[in-house]
Amino acid sequence: MSSVPHIDIDHVAKLARLALTPAEKEDFSRQLGDVLRHIEQLRRVDVGAVEPTAHAFPVHNVWAADEPQDGLPVAAALRNAPAQRQNMVAVPKVVE
Amino acid sequence: MADAVCFQTIAVLADRLKAGELSAVELMQAVIARTRAVDPMVKAFNTCDEADALAQARASDARRAAGQARGLLDGIPVGLKDVIAVRDQPLTASSRMLADFISPYDATVTQRLKAAGAVLWGRLNLDEFAMGSSTENSAFGPTRNPWDLTRVPGGSSGGSAAALAAGAVTATLGSDTGGSIRQPAALCGVVGLKPSYGLVSRYGLVAYASSLDQIGPFARTVEDAAILLGAIAGHDPLDSTSFRTDIPDYRAVAGAAPRPWRIGIPKEYFGEGLDSEVAEAVQRAIAFYQSVGCEIHEVSLPHTSYCLDTYYIIATAEASSNLARYDGIRYGHRSRQADDIVGLYEKSRAEGFGAEVKRRIILGTYVLSSGYYDAYYLRAQKVRTLIRQDFLQAYGQVDALLTPTSPVPAFKLGEKSDPLAMYLCDIYTIGANLAGLPAISVPCGFTRAGLPVGLQLIGRPFQEADLLAIARSYEQAHDWHRRYPTIR
Image (cartoon, rainbow over the protein chains, first blue to last red):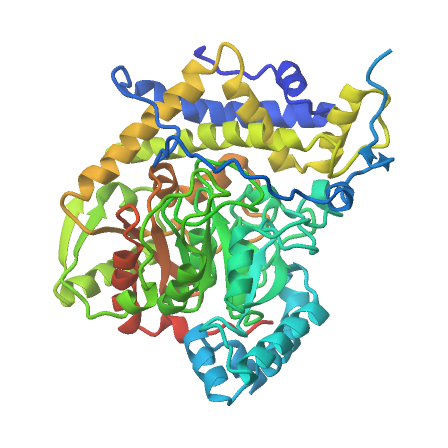
């Protein structure tokens, strides 16, 4: 962490696949700067020997019987697709 | 008469349905009439399907006539926050991203409510993708507090709390990631319960922060919350974080005779920022427990001041990952302005998400990004361990912790325009999510301006039965839950 937290908004927006307007970039930079300054206080906590917690009650080795089951019918799975053709989701061309 | 029915509890209505004094169709008709009368002002419902609800009610009456009634919830109208999937019904998360989405399947809680015979009524408004504390972040407009229409109902499950408080439904479900059930329950004067993490299946819940999200009930009384919890709790193979534990008859144990509980008062929850009228109401509740023979202990949760920051790192990190699925490809909003595939992702997300969702995705992406992961995300996970240890240590000494639910009563719409000020609304509720603990908000009074105040009790992991019993002993000695708002 640097002493003056700052989000490189263009870089992060690109990572997040989010097109932001110039006004959004300015607002979010300022607002998230405030949030990051607040978050700076976490640096005061001694976490040297502390294990991280990902879940409050981790459940390990969750197995399911390998039994075939019906999935969603094609029509139901495609019902919410923005575009479809021949039982497939239609997307813009991704290869040259 | 019709309005009186709309404010009755599940427990009372179940008796009346059983006795044949009332039919499920009559009850549903009264609820529909009440919803039509009040929702243009309160705006708690995103959508509701009157024909479908009446068909469910007719089916309930037919079961009862055939001697096949399914128990207390058969014929009872239950509303769902619009992040819980109901097959063939809209599921919007109050987002433009999912404005036209129709759910292809039922959430596990939906299936369990259907199996119990409940009449599912309405898709209830929320802060978009459950991100917020006021229900102002909805793409379909804010919900208003039935006690004062110029004020917010809290959030993110504001629609679930407000619809119930307004008499437009008998009970509801919400989801709670950082306080999204308890805080609106407090601000609207109803009971709200966040179960232990893993007690209720998350299958079919629109994901926000998966290690924190839990579905739970809103109800008029602790007894009703116990009834609803009993219907939705229990292991589910479709949720791999679902926890195997015995599910008692919550209603029966909550109604058992009061015991001399040991109640802890965490001193860190009564500091700066706590409204004086909220503090007074909570102090009176502490005095009540003392007067009935409970031991009151001051305890310390030393890492409390780090809860908010820890939460906003973990929750936004998980959100940035969970919301990556909204890319305009398989479902959800697709931009018409894009020329290539990356542009399609970026523009679909830009057009589909509102400002708060974008803010949290940006923050979450940042704390997970190369060079910052250890400093923010990993450190927050370690502080989470310390926060959890604080709670577990306190439970060596006490059975439950008692705190205010929200530092302030319902605030005005538009009052908290600064994101950080809004985030501070959750300061007393976040700890239970980070530690995975069950917690309940119970009405404990009103401010001089007539706004409800809520009391929070935080219990031991998977000891919902004790938590409900402690809450019910307070409720039975008070009548705050019998007051209803005049909506104008």
